[in-house]
Each structure stands twice: as C-alpha cells, then as structure tokens.
Image (cartoon, rainbow, N blue to C red; front, top):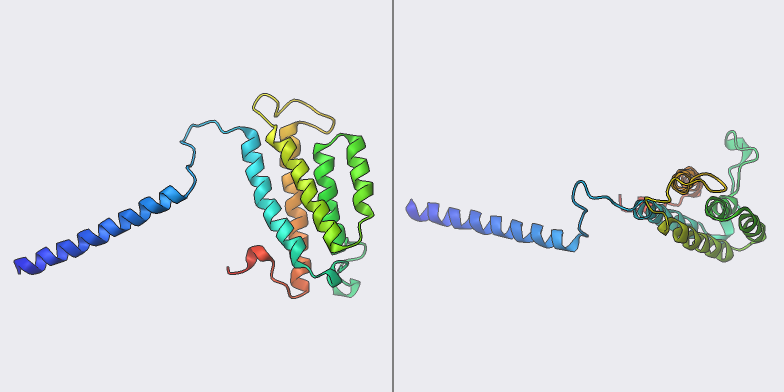
Length: 190
C-alpha cells in the first residue's frame, strides 16, 4: 500500500510539473500584459483595435472573388435598393480612413482617386494603403494630444469613430460574403 501511494504521488507530482511547465511556456510565448494600473498610450490602444479590424476587413476584401466584387443584393431579396456594392463597401472604408485622419484637401483627393479604381487588386491595395496612412496618425496619438481639437474633432474621438464606422461596414461585407456562400476568413474554423 505504501508503494502504491508513493507511485500515485509521483504520478500526480509529474502531472503538476508538466502542467506548470506548459503554463510557464505559454506565458513566455504570450506578449506581456501591462500591469494593472499601468498607463497605456492612447495610440497603442487605438492602434491595436485598428490592427484587429484591419486584419478582418482586408481578409474579407481578399476573400470575395473578382467576378463578384460588384455584387449587391437584389431588390427582390429585401430592402436593398441603392445599397453599396461589395467593391463600394471596400472603397468606402479606404476613403474613410483618409477622411478621419487627413486634412480635407487630402481626403477629397484620395476619395476621387479611389473612386476611379475598377479591379479587385487595385481596390484591395488602396484599402491596405489607407490603413498604413491611418496607422501613422493613430500611432501619433498621445495622452497630451488625444483630445485637442482638429478639423474633424479630436484625434482620440476620430480614432474611436473610425473604428466604430469600420465595424458597421465590415458587418455588411460579411453579409455579402455569406450571400455568395463564402465563409468570412475570421469565421473559418470556429
């Protein structure tokens, strides 16, 4: 009996050590979370949110086949009169990234440039370029300048509005993908 208890304790001990080692390795692999009470720069917070949405939106933009890029739901499917096509949704997000973070002249010039794009490749590249531009602005948001007014509002407010705006259009893109029997990349494997 003594020997059985000793073996059982050894097995339990080994299991606990293996779990602890696995947990420690997982903790090392994960980026360190800031300690509670740590001040995180606003640009870092907004930038992380923007990156998460960017990944989902760009992957969704890439998922729609070129031959369906001008898809919009038929009016016979419901109240869809006058809605944006898939390509117009993607273009709108790209244009909005400039609207939220550029001066008015630059935003209007970019909108005119993006509206002329026809192919999926051109439109997706414009989307990616608009995110690079937006990240430059977001990265520059600090505690000192986040709530100083700009042409459109405050930098922090515009970043928050931009992120919320993107979520709306991402939801529409997801619906269009699903109407074409395409599972959005962010939903695959779930």
